[in-house]
Length: 265
Image (cartoon, rainbow, N blue to C red):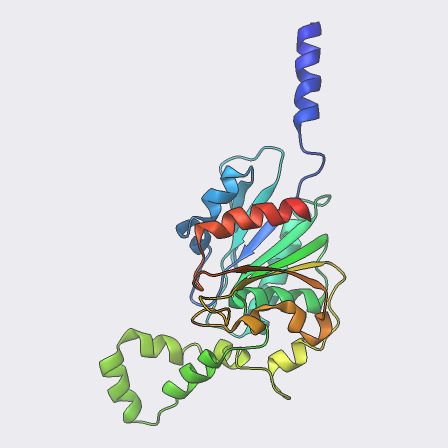
């Protein structure tokens, strides 16, 4: 009996003093599966985080089982739709996360455009238990790649038909993405990022994971200065920053970096 009680007490002391919940938000043309396919999920699991399920607009696809400890969810958003629409769907998903974990802090992690979507959800308010926002290669100040994509598909008929014939599915995908691409052009008066970057943000922790590229200027899609939340007018000086000279896509290293960052929050 004494041995049983001792074992029980030891198990209790080995449990984490608190548990966090991370919500992983994919970027443009990504999906909830992006975190798995890139190796991020596996790296998080290696560092003690447990997958808890996938949130879709239709509801939660829960993981097979749950035990005490840090957990992470991924979300499935219509990434070709406007940032505002995605943010509203995300807010609904975050409300469900808070219902499932009423006493646990929530860390939002957004890759690429997903970081902007997460920030929009936070600015609109109503997100409970928010603890931190970590963004990875997110175009907070916009990217000229969005402008280029819009220009390349802004064609009258019959030029559009010819381009579609030779470019194939990619041309249609970009044309169908105008809503989100317009939201990701470099900030200027009158557009979404100009407005968003001047709104009051919640008093939580902010961390910018910046893809610095081989010469420190950024990755192939987003310049480094746009990825750093310290350059957002409403958040100047409030974000920690981590620089990594890798490409824009999610990498296995992101899982390790996220685990380390979330342990420090």
